[in-house]
Image (cartoon, rainbow, N blue to C red):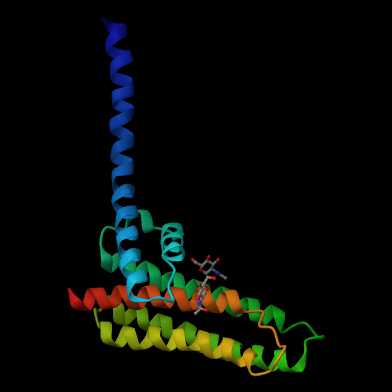
Length: 187
Ligand SMILES: *[C@@H]1O[C@H](CO)[C@@H](O)[C@H](O)[C@H]1NC(C)=O
Ligand SMILES: *[C@@H]1O[C@H](CO)[C@@H](O)[C@H](O)[C@H]1NC(C)=O
């Protein structure tokens, strides 16, 4: 009797424990998928897979239980990305053998990214106080910084941007934040 009870109840106990743990996670993943589906429909420049992968990998995203929290996570991801890319540009600029044209573009990008970091801080403050119009302007200007940076390299034939992927990531993360803010504004 005792043996049947324990062999029955231990798996049951484990099952209950694990379901409680995973329930929140499953709900969060569902929220991420639904949100990304809407974002990708609204913005053709935004990839659904990029959106899901980025948000799922973000710290705390497994605990996000509403759209507002998810939006905050996306702006924080954007800020972290900008900070990393700014350091990356700084490293690239240490190379003495850089082509002068590429160097001048990298300098412009460094300035653009340096300005964009405090702008995301402002976006976070505006977003927290639900001033979505202001937060929208902030994030839009960060998005513009990524395209301005990338366009600089295209001005000279044959020049190759070492920042294409990073600019693209910045662009797409901005697009996620903007989409989420639009959804919140309409709610
Ligand atoms: C920027 O964010 C994207 C998506 O979350 C990630 O894949 C990439 O590694 C990040 N890049 C940097 C430099 O932090
Ligand atoms: C960013 O990269 C993705 C995948 O490589 C591509 O589909 C998309 O058009 C790019 N977006 C921009 C703004 O360059």
